[in-house]
Length: 387
Image (tube, rainbow, N blue to C red):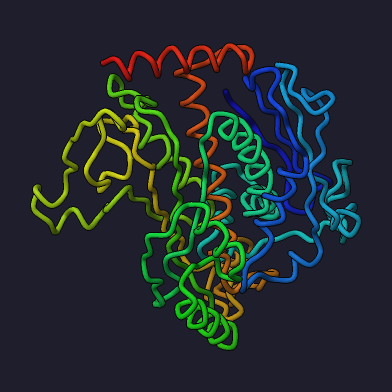
């Protein structure tokens, strides 16, 4: 499977083309829109979330609620486009046209300057419009389709916020269903009510100070069969592919699996998962410090991955930069921004991880229809059980 996205943050729409989805997969548009709505929630979001009410439209590849096997075309319209038609239109305009709203002052922490230099663009709007985190709307919609495929085979995806700023949530032993219920009820997507209150207070304090906050989010995937991914080539290792996907999310700067960086401070006996066997479970691990991945392949244990999001780069406490025209120092201009987007970033991460798991699942059990995949999976499960 593969997909491409197109569109700008203030353009007419965001578009995704998804290729390789099997036929006869039931697709509920409400489930896709549910994931899009989750992305727009979270304490600390800015005014853009009040303007856009994201809903997806399926323009191809789905008929009467089921995939046909053809490429799926998916569109999310930008409601704010009506205010940007002259600024972001595709028709040529005069260079001195006032409606261009040319951007020539790059913002620290953004793609503005690097992209302008790389693509030789003197209007940095041509960079910021595509590099914006608005692009993740399309990726969440794609991930929602992947979740439909995974759910067909009993694979479930959940996420939670573990840290915002210096406030850390306590870890719990909740079931995945209970974790989903509690985090959906929380404005900062945590199951720890004490930490929730402190996180909200920290976001309020940062907003009052014109600053922003980052954090750590965790994604858990249960029901993943053993053997997705491969050890035979570097680019087939599933943990590497998931890591790349997570780090491709705007503002993400780190990723870890299982106990992750903690492993550096422990002895090997406290890091590796002992292998056990019984008639009920077959081969399994006594613990899951590896986060469900060893040798680039799934172990059959839940996949556990965490991502680190830096504080959003657009600050109301503006930083210093340099004008690309005059080369003079200035105080960076402020665009509409969030104080904290960590809860929303967790939703985005859930969906990009879901896509990578689904893609690896299709590589292993791939067929042109759901029925063929189900037969391939059953044959493999029989092989594993008789090993």
